[in-house]
Length: 183
Image 1 (tube, rainbow, N blue to C red):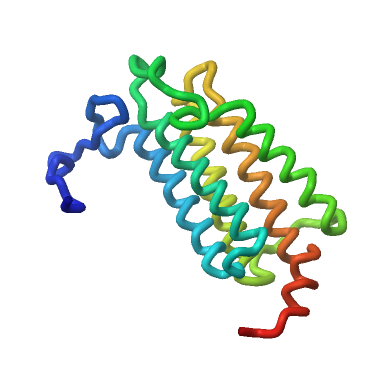
Image 2: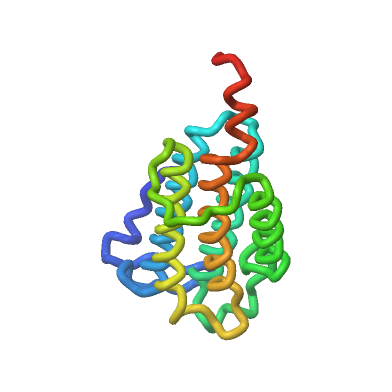
């Protein structure tokens, strides 16, 4: 199978469950912002220790973003075809983000001042991903159906990415990483 299809040469792209829209449509712009955030999360993963708690958490979040992008890439007429957790964001997915925020927040001291991103490469990549998620949230706001959880998910995800960056800067992961000899 070839990576190119030539179907998009006319400036359109296919939607999940059929139909085509312009590549500069609001839904595709929002999906592009999510894709950028997912890539920035990949940058954070590349800097994290393979198999670490951070690596595993990021892999799960990146996979969740595929679900969210599927929902954004579905025409309103095809929304009934969406499947929770596979092609549509669920309440459980949002709740899971809140649980991670709560658990990770307990692992570093409270932040009492504005944060200047860039303390280390991992937290900087997480902060970059957070800003891209915020942009995706703004772009998805006018697109998401009234019963959609895309916007709440993106809102919590940006909070989680901020929390993960602070955890990496101040949390217990630094102590355990420093104790391990370089490989």
